Amino acid sequence: MMDLAVLGLLHEGPLHGYQVRRRLHELGFRRVSFGSLYPAIRRLEGRGWIAARRGNGRRKEYGLTEEGRRAFEELLDAGVDDGDERRFRIRLAFFAHLEPHRRIAVLEERRAVLTDRLAELRRNRRRSTPADRYTVALMERSVATTESEIAWLDGLVAAERAGRT
Amino acid sequence: MMDLAVLGLLHEGPLHGYQVRRRLHELGFRRVSFGSLYPAIRRLEGRGWIAARRGNGRRKEYGLTEEGRRAFEELLDAGVDDGDERRFRIRLAFFAHLEPHRRIAVLEERRAVLTDRLAELRRNRRRSTPADRYTVALMERSVATTESEIAWLDGLVAAERAGRT
DNA sequence: ATATAGTTATATCGGATCGATATAACATGG
DNA sequence: CCATGTTATATCGATCCGATATAACTATAT
Image (tube, rainbow over all chains, first blue to last red; front, side):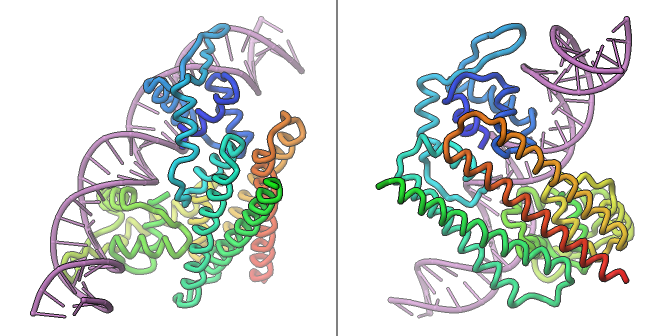
């Protein structure tokens, strides 16, 4: 998760740790902690996917290596599930680096996961125990947000197909 | 997180591990893994908050102890932040066990967190770098879902106030 | 009858992530 | 001049995730 995020951001130019975290924050990934970011950077550095070049003062600027660029493209395109929302959102953030037909495939895979989930939510709602009003509210909210995301995905797919012409 | 969830479910009657996971799944917490569930059960057992009584076959049924009941009520009512969505949703699932005025306080704290977040999202959008259309889509979606959740919370608060009379 | 596949159930392992905390340089405003 | 805030890197323990193993029981097909 962090791997793809860090590689993707460094793909668009060198950054130091704190800047990576800020960019992620801006992209809607609030609460990416330093406790996961710095170990991730260390990890990627160990694999030779990123390299530090010391900048001004104490800051370490990290850049993508050639190996890292290949790893990024592989991760971005790798066997989508895509049941994990965070992973999907990060993938989407770097969609520009993915081939158009793969973009549509990723979007539709995510859509399929959500329609399955929606069907299950409705099944559960039908044959559910009495249930107090708060759990009902929770389940109804799940249905609503899932429907909303499906509609959003449909919009993205439509835009993708239109843009492709 | 798991702690409150497990205690809350056992508060409504004894269950074994697999059933806890199924109930959580039904409540919209898909992908609560056994790798976090079973260690959590072990943890709570170690603290004397839950106790196993062996059921049919290999199944272990867990029930809430008196100490566990107190711990549950304390956790449920404890200093809300509530920036963590999962924690908030679990809290909401057990709202029935919380005093009405505390319920409203929790809802409004969550609302406050979301309005702050919304303001920040809009600030970022205004003074953002060029940004390709996918990151724009991502950021716009964040705004939309946050607005939607705020509206939902408003509904819950209104219902709470109406029900209180 | 008996393979085959699926569900229920408990468990563990390594690695990833989180939240809190520590440190320190530098900037800014009162 | 000094307190507060921001930038920046780092680490620790606890928790959580994903994958995997095991095994009994159940339904279904051949």
